[in-house]
Image (cartoon, rainbow, N blue to C red; front, top):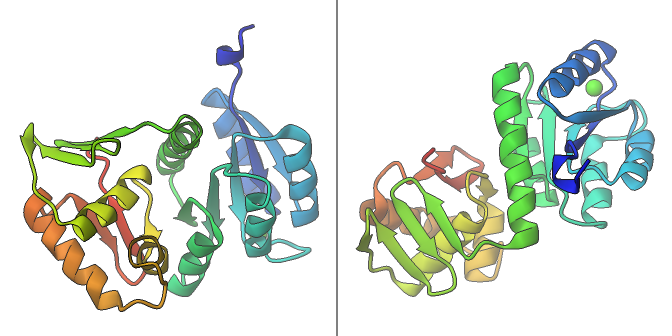
Length: 227
Ligand code: CA
């Protein structure tokens, strides 16, 4: 078996046995290799042992809050983390993203939705490792090497800040970045005025199309992958 044919290993940290069993069957059927952990401690142990390609992380775990595991995993690298949680509060979602989670799926979720997010997470993992300098998002092409943006083949003129914001969204294509993450990346401080962000997103939408940037109200923004 060649290395390319190896199934992606997905670590599930989930204490709900019924849900974990269903997830395991779904992931296996989709060609992945699931590994199960019921507690945060077990999750960290299996993370170190299996070096998974992606982590599905429940927040309500019996030993400690799943949020605290995000930092432990991030200390070891950029493995994509998808948080699965029944917690509805935007604050928790923002916190998970700020701590370094890649995505957040609210329970209850559909299997197809989850598999789509897993595929996106695994793609993102490959991109951050290989670092693609050109990002394609629908009719937009963002050449991160040349700092050149085209829409349906026509060059789009952007100010330097507009470009910086777009580039940050582009390297994280399809992922929601929190307001704090964007302010820090583009304005150098997470305490910068959130109003700047609204203004620049508005300008980008005028130039790139209203659907180019998706907002997650109260949480942040993502560049639509246009697929
Ligand atoms: Ca739980």
